[in-house]
Length: 243
Image (tube, rainbow, N blue to C red; front, side, top):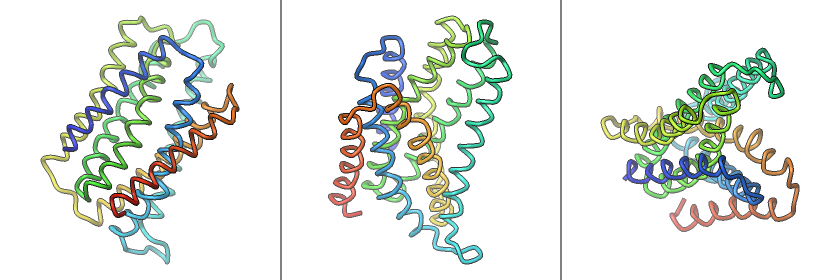
């Protein structure tokens, strides 16, 4: 089931890359909705489940919460490192960008997408409702992943063929990640810790990248409403699935 659902992430990543080539004025609404879905999954489903599965405390703090904070900081560290490398090569305005920088950044996104697939598989090991809600967040997020993978590869002067190759790799990565979980079962405490870590990463992506990008050029009420609708939809999914 997890592999089948990961096909949605595959298609959404390709859709994001296709949109990157034909940017429309409605992209901000799609990103606003994606940010709301991610926020809803983290706060209403992912984190509560992580706390339940990994009930151990470390120095008075639940281990899942510590890993949640660690995931947020890890995503921030990776994002800052990539930004520093970009600045070292002249920034976004530099006219002679190094193609290798774009390929490295895109490769990092491919690795992240593979972990998205692992998260889908791990969530389905908890239950169908959990798997569905995590899959929705990942699929929504992968639109932005596909968009950014194609954009950043092209931005640094790589040929369209290379950009399409990285986009295809990014699209296949969640499938491989989900497939890997078919061959092993994650123990519940480990699963809870991983979901906590993944929740921190997901929250960072939503708060620091997806939502700011959605409101950057279109701080419209409709964008905010899409974000609220995304979070509310996850609340509905959690309620219908019984938590």
